[in-house]
Image 1 (tube, rainbow, N blue to C red):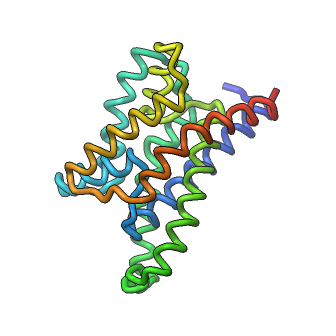
Image 2 (cartoon, rainbow, N blue to C red; image 1 turned 120 degrees about the vertical axis):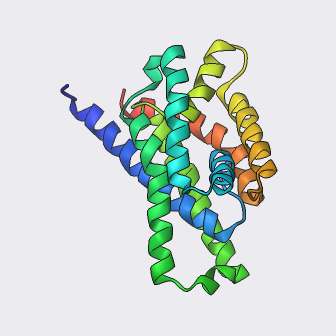
Length: 206
């Protein structure tokens, strides 16, 4: 399969964005002030099962991919594969590296936690919006949101995203994950930012 220059740029954007998401997720988990809803849910499940966050997230993504394949195959692309496996395992790898290089007590200092949280939050929201707007496929969890929005034409994506994310937060909370200020901010901002970023991306590659 050959790709033109525009497609190659979109693939590169999706890959770099997903790597940025994995990096930011690792630090959001370390400062323990909340994460994105999908991470919140999956981190809770992984802890209960006694397996790594990346392994459980990859397993659930495979299950959700089957649903997406049956409902809307056009949502699947390189971005789907990148997100399915890289976010969780990059997060696990960065956590392992920081455990080796950074003293654990650094993450207990409130001022440091707040700074890390703010930077990681900004990186995550921008990276997630970029990857979803690249048009090279999205992760199964994100695809579910687009499918619901397409099926219910009167409901915009940002509303479906908030509702599905709220459900993920609730499940994560029941499983013992931290639902904090970061979680609330991502639920409220990611949908609108994705919608805005997609318009800009479409205009750029028109």
